[in-house]
Length: 483
Image 1 (cartoon, rainbow, N blue to C red):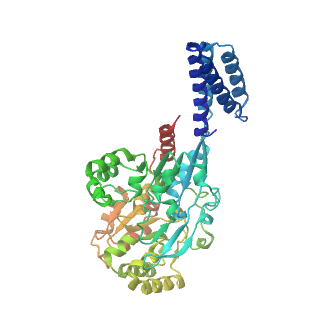
Image 2: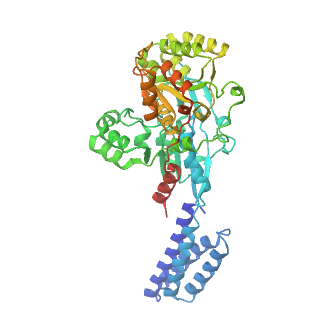
Image 3: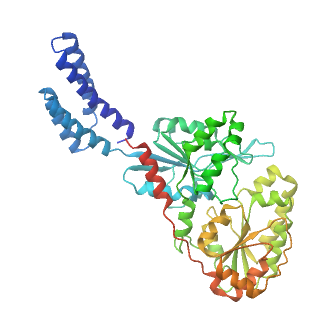
């Protein structure tokens, strides 16, 4: 039964006991006798109306009725305790996941898996509708990505889901922007302050992996309006709390009030995205059909991640063009799996429109050639699993997540178009055997490809062992709302 039903039933039991105890003090008062009888009748009718609660429920209810009707108050109290324990133990919590982009589902998936397997939960996945915005920040296209979720995830059409009447116990979201995103925007009924009206706990889990000492503490409205923001490190919690004065200015509130809220809401429970990375195998990350016979073991398959941040840092696409040229020159020994950020083109269209034609031309030329594949899959896991190494911007959460594979990571410096590394092959080989993370300009992309090509054992990563954050988050939130 739902928690609100259980609370109602327990209140009925308590009201009956209270009224019967009152009757012992005023049994000569006809008005009180009549009032107690009405209380008993009304509340017992509610208890009896719960017809699907099971045999044990019926047995304890009958026992409770007999002891009340025979005025065995002490016996009734004992039965009431057993009855209430049964009711509270029968609660099934409604837990609803409301992702908006299928490509960001990994930030919630392991929590959903934990809830879906938990007998205490009824878990639903309701992908929510959003709009792509034009350069004037006006809705240009209505989108719902429910068809892009994995086949093993049953999804519910948000237009058919009655949130206002269902009132789930917990809602999980990964979109924190509400009405402030400049590229996409969810429907207003899904803004965090609106969702909060219809659940007991609203939980925001970021769709990016925090990078200690690097990630930004920029305020996002769901951080304040949600009951909890799940972070993946103590550094994230500490630095976001320290940024409370900045948040307070944006909210127009007192520093101390916002800081107190952040201290209560921010909690380190790990990263569901890491859960996904360390669990990948050939079955869960099946190679896309169009990659077969192209992504082959004889070459160094490099995942090239192009982020929105690095384009804004570089203020041009020159580094992207130079990087693709390197792969074109090296195509006999290297192969690129290019994964531009899913919102990169929309962001250029909205915020850097002068680069849009150039980006489209780069994309057309790449698609017409044969030195790589474009990864536009909703999930980044195919690229992570089937690549041998990674190249991308240091502040990208994908850069951080790739480290957990144990395979080589080269961090890109987007302002340096042509990297000239003076490190010898032997020195670089020793470095890569010692650590799986190196940086430009100390190491160039071409250097990395050459050394990995000549030393195939460097392709083999060893995934970091990590506690399952999904189970941890699910247990924590259920304990928070336990009856």
